Structures are given as structure tokens and as C-alpha cells.
Length: 496
Image (cartoon, rainbow, N blue to C red; front, side, top):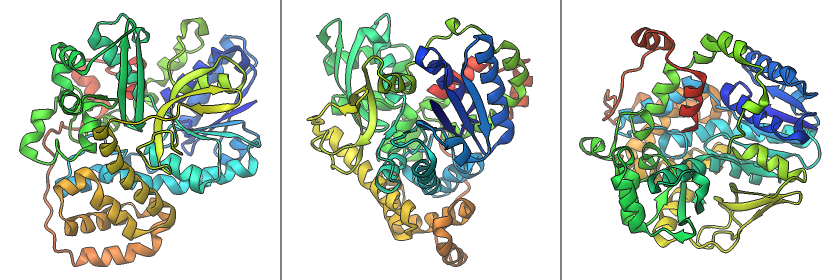
């Protein structure tokens, strides 16, 4: 069996998934084929994995290649972890919208940043799918971990021709742990959940603790009494109060999917806690990624020295990947939350959209729990994002500037902040800045440049309502008096 990773240079994440798989006996004798365009990171990851495998005397093999088709040839499972354009493009996703007053925390799902991320990612996703169809094992599975999750998965299924495509995210698990903590449960598995919606806007519609259903009033009381969450999750608690249901995503994420919490600069700090970037800091994820961009290279000697520990010391994570593959290969049935084509699973969302909802995996495939009806407020919020995702996905597939503009115009936060002329100009500016990653828009770039030369909208030099100063890893080390980012802390931050 061959399991391929695209974007294997996602260092901590790739290694976690491989170690999870190696905890399962049926994967002790597989080939892990690693592909990335960053040769240095690819080689470092491969070295770590080989040392893990050799130290545990396993017959598994690690191969590495800058040639994607070579890595995918004969693969039964293909796992996608890429970020197209890297930090250079990501900076444009955050900083250009800020000039127009659009204050994002993460910017990788919808909003202006997420929509442009999709324009960069989807052409590459379609190329990945073409390679899978051509050279991978017949019926191969494409497991997408890359954001923007819904648009990438939607494009792969509708336009990539890979039927066995599954979108995977850990947002449901993270929120589940948070709910369990608020309720005082010893471990999150003591709390049972049913969570459904769309990626990053999934709703815990049924929560049970010790066999008893938890009411919204109980959950509100638990979160408001919690010493940390009462301060760091103000948006989520407010939505819980008004909707009656808790949402999966962090305070920073959720606040940028809605039109109400980040549209007035003088109000943003009312909802945002800056003790940690994910609570809503302006451009927080970009700042953290920039400060830590070289953490792996700097700490690699330490990681290599510590590699090769017995796998008995590794606790298999609740990332879906290893559990899904185990179930598909005839192991125990696995229940998780998966991003798939709706097709009527959620009755009050469009059949063509990508949903995230409970399902079961066995050797026959993924079997979703059907007949889910979301509460009306939750469905309305999801529907607004679905319409944006559909237009954004089709714009990326076809290089359609008009659809991209309309997606921007209808985005909840963008539309709450900007007027149409501002949105048109901002879209042009983002197209020109990211032209090298947007081959499908090559025919539009000269026109965008011309319009920008005659631009009438005045922008501003604004760093946002809650922005921390970017510092390098070396500066952080000096400030803290030594190593500031252990591997464990980096992974924990990335998981959040």
C-alpha cells in the first residue's frame, strides 16, 4: 500500500499523521510517499520519519520526491496539506483588505482572504486530481486538509473528477474538548455530541453529559462561569445566547464569518481578547506564521536527536486520517465529522454544497447520517456562506472575475464594511498583487492594472483594531532568554 502526502513539508502535521498511522498494525508495511516543492523541508521531514521507523524496527518505507506524479503513482490514499503561495501570498490576503477596513483574524475560509486563497488553491487542486486520475491506484481516496476546506473539496468533487474526495478538519474535536472542559467533564469523550453545518460553521445541536441532554441555558452558564472562556470566547458566547447553539470555531474565526462583530473598528476590542492570536487578533495567524516561519529549521537538530522514540510513547491523536484509513481497510467502524457533498443529508441546505456532518466509515466507504435539519438561525448563517463559497469556487475554476467580485460583494463581513466600488477596487488590487499564483486570471491582470491606475477610492494605512507587532523567531528567543517554541507548543498552537 502507498500513502502519498502533497505538501509534506507541513512538518509537524505530516509527522503527526504518519505516527498516528504507524500506531495501527496494518500500516506497518506501507510506503509513505512525500512530495513538496520545498526540498529542504521535505528532506527534514523524511529524515525524522525514517528515524522513527528504523527505531521501531518497522518495515514501512519513506520515499520523497519533488515530482508530484512520481509520488502519487500507485497511491491508494492521497493526503493534501498544501498552502499555495505561502506566506507571501497570505500577507496580501490580510494586508490589502485592511486598507479597505476589512479586519480579519485568520482569513483562510471565506471573507476577502479566504476567497483569494481559493483562487490560488483550486487550480492546483484540479491538477492534483488530474494526476490522481492518471497515475494513482484506481478508486484512490483524496483526503483534503487544506483550506479553504469547503471550496477546495467542492472543486475536487465537481470539477476534479475524483469521486472519493473527503474534506477533513479538526474544528469539531477542538470545540468538543472546550465544551467538555466548560462542563467539568474529566475527558471530552465523557460528553457526547452531534455537530452539523458547513466547515468552520458547524453547530453542536445535541450535547449530552452522563446521558443527560445539556440545555442551552446550562451551556451558557458553564461558559460564562469559566475563568478563561468567559474572556476569550465572547463572540461564541454571544452567538450561543442569540442562536441557542454553540459553534465549532474559535472566537477569531467565527467573528470574521459574520457581519456583526468586526465591522466597526471602535467595537472590535469589545469582542476580542489578545492574550492569544486565535481569540481574534487582527492578522493574528499571519503574525504567528511569520514569526515562526523558521522554527522547524532552527530546531531540527533537537528534533532529530529526539526522534526514534518508541511508538508506545506516542498517543494516537483524534485527527480523522488514521481512523478513516483503518476503517476503509476493514478495521473498526469509525464515527467522525466529514466534509462531503450534501445531497440532502442536511435538509435545509442546498444539495450541491459541501457540508460537515456526522458519518460512519467502514470498508464500503463513508456513510453519512441523513435527514439532519439545522435550527433556522444556524441554517441561515450557513446559507450566506454557501452562496459565497459557490461563487468563489466557480470563479476559481473558470477565471471568472465577475463571479469573484460578486462573491466578495456578498461575503458577510466584506459587505458589512465596504461599498461596491471599494470591493471592485480591492479585488483588482488583490488580483494584481497575486497574479503569479493566478494563471486562470492572466487575461484579467492588465485590465485590473489599468483600472487601478485610474482608481478613485481612497484607502488608508491601517494596521487594524487589535494588531500585535511582528517579531522574528530570533527576537522572540532573545526576549525570552532561549528557545521559545518547543515542538509540542508549535503543534498545539497549529491544532488550535
